[in-house]
Each structure stands twice: as C-alpha cells, then as structure tokens.
Image (cartoon, rainbow, N blue to C red):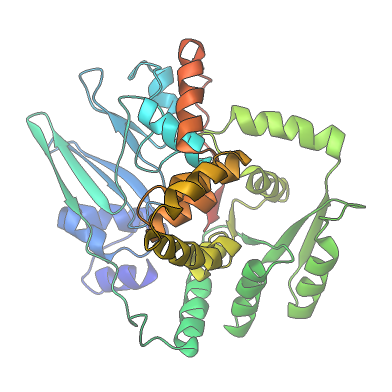
Length: 382
C-alpha cells in the first residue's frame, strides 16, 4: 500500500492517517471496483456508498479472508463469519446436505459451499455490487505470473519467496513467526534473514517429554538465524483440554484440523502479537505430502488394470472387504483412473458409501447450535 499511497500523493491526494484502510477507501472512492485490481494481498471488504445508495463486497484472489452473504430473509445480509447471520435470524439454522457430505469426505467445510443452507460464500477474486434495484458482480483480473512453470528456475523461486516474505512484514503492529522444526517455517525465517530484514520474534509450542516436542530443533533454528524466540510449554490436562473446548466453541466452520493453529495463535496473543507469518500451505504448494508422490502411481495402476478385462471389478470386490482404505481403493478402481479421483482416494476421510450411510442414520438428529457471534482479532499471514 505504500507504493500506491505514494502514487496518489503525487496526484495531490491528501491523507489523514498512515493506515492502509484509508488508502483503500480513497482508491475505491476514486475508481470503484476497478481499483481492486491494484491490490496485492489478502482482504475481504464491504463499502457502503451513502450517496449512491449501494454496497460493494469484495474478496481477495485466493479467498484467504472469508466473506458470506444471504438474501434468505428478503434483505441482503453479510458477515465475515456465519454465526452473526444465524444469531441475527438472517438465515434459518438448517444444514446443507451437500456441504455436510463434503465435510464428511474431506474433514473440512468446502470454501464455496457453506454448511448452513441459504448462506453463500463470495467466491475468491470476486466483487459484488448491490443496489435496491438489483446487483452486479465481476472478477478480479488473474494474478500475473512472472515465470511460467516450464521455464521457472530455482533462483526464480528463491527470489519470489524472498519477495513474499519481505512484503509480509509490512504491518502497523509487531509481526511474529510460527516456528516449528519443519522446513516450511524454517524457510520463511531463512528468507527473512537473507532479505536483510529485522527478524520477527518466533514462537514455538513445546510438549516436554513427548516424541512430538519440536522445541529443541526450533530453538536451534532461532539461534542459528538470530531470531528472538519464545517457547511456550503446554500442560496436557490443565490447558490442552479446556483450550480444545474453546476451540470448538469458537470455530465458525468445523474442521478435523486447525487446533494446532488455534494453540499457537492463542500463545501469540498472550505475547501481544496480532499478526504472524506462517508456513501453512508449503506442503500443498511444493508437493510435500506422500500422497502427492503416490497419486501418479495409483493412476498408472488404474490405467494398467483397465487394459486387463475383469481385473478392475475383481480388485474392487477384494478391496471392499479390507476396511475404510480398501473401500476407497475399491471406489477408485471402479471408475476412470483420473488424478482428481486418485487424490480423493488418498485424502478423503470416509468413502462415499460410508458418508451416505452416516447422513441417512443421522437425519433425525442433526441440529445447528447458534453460539454468540465472536470475531477473531488474530490474522495469520498464510
């Protein structure tokens, strides 16, 4: 935002604060939705124009920040969480069967299919303009790629990582860094050191006496790169259990993952950090999980079996008898051997037939609780 601010100041645009939000307001007032194409970073925003009597909603290109809306009550209601829409009776507390099916398959809610029927997520990279007479929407321009993947080099990747890490330190509050013993967070720390920036304070969760305690390795990394370091030991009984209950109560959408991020975020707030850098997504971006290596093998096996008459159905019958993983393999071999289906085989929680059984058996017991809306003031930079 500093570069954009300088451009506007050169055009004699006055500013009253140092806030990036003021800059955003000025840009939108001057240029409307087209100004969104100039933004680099994550955002979800709502702008009410009292003169034109219209509302603008917009969401960043990756959809990092959530933004939901509904017209179920006859009016347009929006929020960054689903719970305010429930608490304000803007939408009825009814689960979406399609979204619940997705959740039981994947262990997380679909980013484009909220669990509550009647609630819509504004798609990533989209803006929506509402007026009393109607609405219109548009897409943000695609993110330009400086290097196409076939020609990109290791040096290109290194420079991109350095650039991204450096620009994420732009903040009006102190920035922390989630540091484990893994490659992802260590790479961020190394990138910040290489860029010559003042290193942020790194924070690590410790579980003393357990096999999964990463504190010793994290301490070594912090010492090696010269980062101020905080280690927080957690008591399994006195802290983790009540923290988990609080995590469940304050999760806007359920997930089988994320408790670890909740814990380190809570510790970060204890030490005064509202913003932190995180290595989340590194394995997805760089193919770090074993499933990324196994998927091509499964696809090749499926194509080979297609060439052998009767072998597909035979293997499907055998795998069906060997538990949940076998049932997922049976589903894969019973259809076309595509990469998407192979990834689903490795990453899904329950096979489709099990999900259908669970939904059918729970139809009469599904209820949605409506806890008080509770916004989070912590924003991990992912």
